[in-house]
Amino acid sequence: MPDFCLNPNYGQGKSKTSLGCYDLFIGGSLPPFFPCLCFESFSPFFCLPATVGLTEEQKEFQKVAFDFAAKEMAPHMAEWDEKEIFPVETVRKAAQLGFGGIYVQPDVGGSGLSRLDTSIIFEALSTGCVSTTAYISIHNMCNWMIDTFGTEEQRHKFCPSLCSMEKLSSYCLTEPGSGSDAASLLTSARKKGDTYILNGSKAFISGGGDTDLYVVMCRTGGPGPKGISCLILEKGTPGLSFGKKEKKMGWNSQPTRAVIFEDCAVPVANRLGEEGTGFNIAMKGLNGGRINIASCSLGAAHASVLLARDHLNVRKQFGELLASNQMATRLVAAPLMVRNAAQALQEGREDAVALCSMAKLFATDECFAICNQALQMHGGYGYLKDYAVQQFVRDIRVHQILEGTNEVMRMIVARNLLQA
Image (tube, rainbow, N blue to C red; front, top):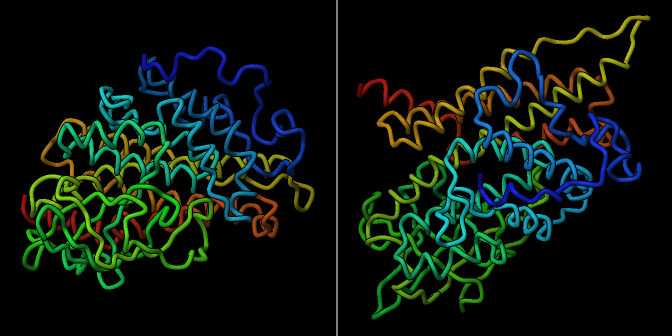
């Protein structure tokens, strides 16, 4: 069992509760319609308990993640959203459990877990706050990219502080003029002696301005994907600046800004991999990122269904309890697809890219539909910010756009079928 699951005192001293018995954790400081989900809330759950098919080890760290979500995230979820607070201290507490480098190798401070293990953890954490968990997932992706494609010197320089989340990271691919067509990016890096001179800008960067390391895809060669390289840029580099903090529909517990490079001198020693391999590195990162973001959608859907269930159990119309809607099929199918894709990615199977795209497409679409239906089942109450279901809807809507839009996921799946 990983060390981060072995703290017997973690989460002790407070009674466990089902959804809504919120005051046991936070003294009744928030209304009971915000979630405080515990491990038992998900087992058994409909036809498929959250623990079905998991090893005993996976059940243990899943429980740790559920407990952390309930105690450290859910009580603050609404405040982080309303006040746009980036909960740095909370994510560092998550890192103490091993969640800062979940699938990073142990020799640089990572937990060394599998992609399936990672999916299970992000699914559980997102029941407490989707937005914060999504940032943790992006940070993990950057950390993994350095661990996997970096030199030994780079791994030991950057990864330990990323695993502890003493330093935070951002993934910089999207530009104002290149979103889905990422290979057309224009940010350039001209080699000059033992440095690259970086110029250009990136858009919609999670953590931008508040994070310490920027994993930047830039053009060092000709047009197309083979002209792209990957550089690690450290905060404080002269010429690095940031746009205004974006006002967003959701994901408000993580800042989003444009990242601007004006003659930034980046050491050649900070290049990941060889020149021209940056696009391949970026795409390999995104394969895992798609599983991660799909897993965050799963957690939101689980939480939303439980919120709807509890609302329906007490809400009456015309003297009768409102009938429960059958969302179970979607909620059973989506995790199966995500976990299958995670296993394929871990094993390096040829169909892994297509399966990751399918999983991201299916899970983010279906889980948004589940959350939206859960809001509908709340009636007018679901539209009030006092009720958590609306925040889950707002937070996961963007999952159908980022890490490759779902339209692009359909293209990848279709291309795979035509090439078979």
